[in-house]
Picture (cartoon, rainbow, N blue to C red):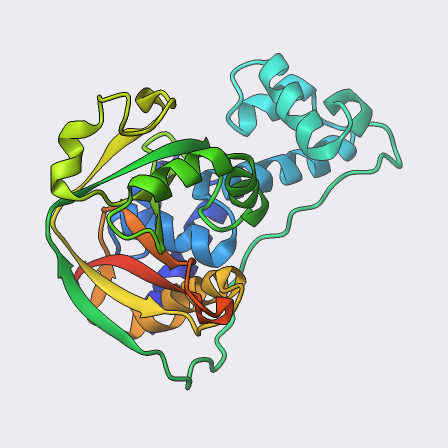
Length: 300
């Protein structure tokens, strides 16, 4: 219950301070959570980063006020945190599809973004098998893309990365310690968005061979990078075995955050999130499954 109350307190605080310069740290305090934990859970459950949510609410309110026709554009821009008419106009057009001046015309079509409210209802009651495991310090070899938004919220951008980098995946599979495994590593970026890696694990003796031309064939080894993974405690969940377990892993991920985590004695830790994708399962493709490794630490 305290988590539900905390999120609602945070939403109320945002709404009461839309015209103020508030920080994520201040908002997280209303949720009784660390800044990192609050941002990750808020994004996964709500589908927006905290910054996106506040920006959308501010622009929604700004459009409504301009449409009333009794305020200047510059006054509304300053009221909602924009230092210049140009920056306000750019954000306003991206959100509403029309300029702030056009929004003042009676009958102008504007976009509304309503505030979020937490509704209490029963959920859960289902079985979720998991194990708690401490993973020792290790390293993976892979390549990355920087994505905006919330991990897993825009499945298409990650799917396109998989489809457009097959050559890299085949090279990694050829040098992998276990060729039946792919890894993904998700690391939230400090300036928003996240780094998404596709990777593999090498045998320890193969790390020294990376600079040898023969190790990766004709490929340039500089296209890959070492991904250090520090020692960390993880909650590990497995999808059902099926031919295409990816979509179920997305559903399971949200369920872990919304159901399992609040009822456990853990919170999210500031560490990489890992997926071990058992894809090359022979002889039957329907034996594929994904392990979700969620970094955790004990509640304080």
